[in-house]
Length: 445
Image (cartoon, rainbow, N blue to C red; front, side, top):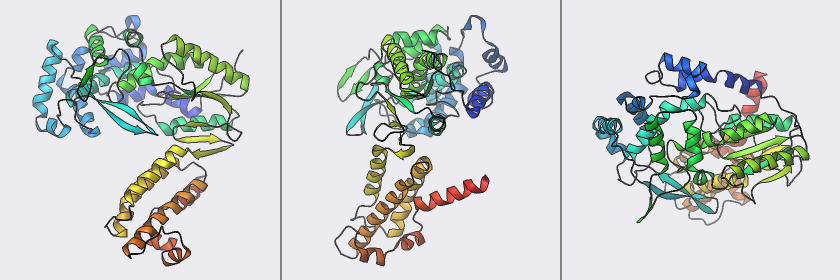
C-alpha cells in the first residue's frame, strides 16, 4: 500500500536545511572542528568515513570543553565518590592525567554506579559514571556528534542541539490538525537497556574508521555496572545517565527514521518515544506492521501493552506524547504529569511547614511557572483546577497557623482568604498567565 507522504513543515524543513550551518556556527566547537573538517562535513569525506579523530578527543582544550559541560550539569558522584566540586578543585591536574591516559592508551573507564529513580508506580534504573569518565564522554561527543547530527532526520527531536520537546509537539499538533488522526503510539520496551552492542558499533563504524575511537566507545558500552556490592558487565544497552548514551540511542534508531520517511510515513520521534501519524486506519496498521518488522529485525521489542493504534478524534482512543494527551480534538495534560505536579506542590505546602505564607508562595512559584511554560497549550480547565488545588493547600496552611484543623475547603476560608489575597502576595496563577498569553498572541496577529 502506498501511503501519502506528508510534507515536513516549513519550519522543520528550514531547520533541517540550516543544520549544517548550525553545526558549524553553534554546535561544533571551532577549536575542534577546523574549517577543513567543516567543509568535509558538508561535502563528504573520502569513503564516507572519518579517520584520525582520537587526537581531537585527548587534546586538553577538548577535555576542558567537556569538563565545562559536566560542571554545568553537575550531578552525583560515581563509584569513586569524586564529586564535581572536588574535581573542580584540581581541574588542571585531572584533565592532564586524562589527556595523557587517552594518548598513551592506558585510559580505562570505571564502573557505572546504578541507582533507581521513581517512574510512575515503579522505578527506572539510572547509571552514574564517574566524573572523570563523564568528562571523557563529553569530549568524545563534541568530536563525533557533528558527524552523525549532519545526517539525522528532521523529525527526530530528542537530545539534539537546537531541538526539543516543544518542536516535536508542534509537529505532532500540526499533523493532527491537518487530519492525520489515526496514530500509532509506539513504545520501545526498555530501549536504552536493550540496544544490541554489535549492530550499534557497526553503525558507528559506518562513519568512523578511527580504531581507537571505536575502542573507546566500546569500552563505555562495556563498562561494568555496580549496584550495592554487585558488579556485572552488560551485554546490551547504553546506560541512561551516560553523556554519550543519547547520541548512540539516536544513531541506532536513525535507520528506522529513514525507512519510515522513505515509506511516506510521518513518524515524530523523541529518543525512544515515537508516534506515527496517518490519515486512515489501514495506513496506521500498515505503519505498525512496518515498524514492528524493523524493531524485531534489529533486536528490539515493542511493548505489547503500551503500543496501539487509535483514532485520536474519539474519546478513549487518544495517545500520549511528551507529557501531553491528544484526545477528542484537545490537548490535555496526561494524568501522570498532573499527578507529578500535585506531588511536588504537596511536598512544598505541608501544613506543618513553619515558614511565612509569603516564603511558601515564593518557593512554589518557580515550579508553577516552569510547569505552565511547558503545558500552556493544554486545555484551559487544567489550569483552573491546578490554581484551585494550590490555593486550597495554602488555605490549609493558614488554618494550621491559626491552630484550626481543616483542609481549606469551606466557604468561610474562601471569604477570609479570597483569590485576590494570594494574588496580592504574588502567587503565580496559571489561569491568569493563560489569559495574558492569549492576549499577547492575539496582539501579535
